[in-house]
Image (cartoon, rainbow, N blue to C red; front, top):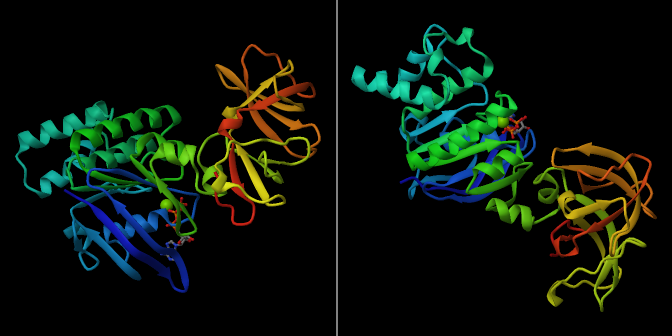
Length: 362
Ligand SMILES: Nc1ncnc2c1ncn2[C@@H]1O[C@H](COP(=O)(O)OP(=O)(O)OP(=O)(O)O)[C@@H](O)[C@H]1O
Ligand SMILES: [Mg+2]
């Protein structure tokens, strides 16, 4: 069992505080992911858990025991880094086998384990090569294999798929998920890729400048983002945001000018007339068409991006010059830049944020 608790965890480099009193619980056997933009402190958190960096303040707890003072080796964690370090003179087989050699496992066990893992990672035919004869992606898989073979209690992974091409990355995601289920271990994962975070994780912590903006299951982050940052960071293409204000309380209406909407909001969430708000709508919730839509608005098409089974359309709503919004049109619609289009947001899927503190209203 391996439950990890971070209590009031802070890290300073010199005078710069890069991790700011984190409080988190990572459950036993959870696939837990830290996601956030470059420099937000993801690798630092992982290094604090691994023991590769000293904690400035607060505690790291493994299964009820404070382990701040334990060396990395004594923590029973395996780590895969953003930049992998392989032994250059050893071939793939020996690189993966290394942790088992250290443990003095039997040769037969080593051979079968290495072959099984190399096969799982799709490098079974590369086993005799040395690292310099491999592509970046293959090297990364060797590093992954070497960490996997140890079967640690906790697996820490820092962007382990970042050097793989897009197809391989998606394939490896599935493998990692399967692996997590099979091994029944706790995985703490770091990525800047929100899609990777959503597809892999049981739980995700969104980090910004060393603080957790929201920690929740993936669907919650998508359906109920806690603030504008999380709303804009999670989901692709990014959520559209439109500034407006409360124009009427009964019925409750918000909007800028002609784009007034009537969100179905709880009485307790209502705000007085004049309150500045930000309306958020995901591109997948905005229908675009060449023909007028029921309850829709007019706009001018700016850009069309075919996306296989449908197309993304970027447009400027009439009366909101300078504001670009992205929506979704069926692939059959022939829409061109410069043409008049109509759009209709799914109002029951609209998000509303307070413009002052950027927090979710509903
Ligand atoms: N050893 C160090 N000394 C001083 N500052 C550091 C050190 N390590 C990291 N930092 C700073 O701490 C902040 C967080 O860095 P960190 O590597 O944790 O970010 P990250 O979220 O992993 O970014 P990326 O996605 O680019 O890998 C950055 O501003 C970085 O410059
Ligand atoms: Mg990093």
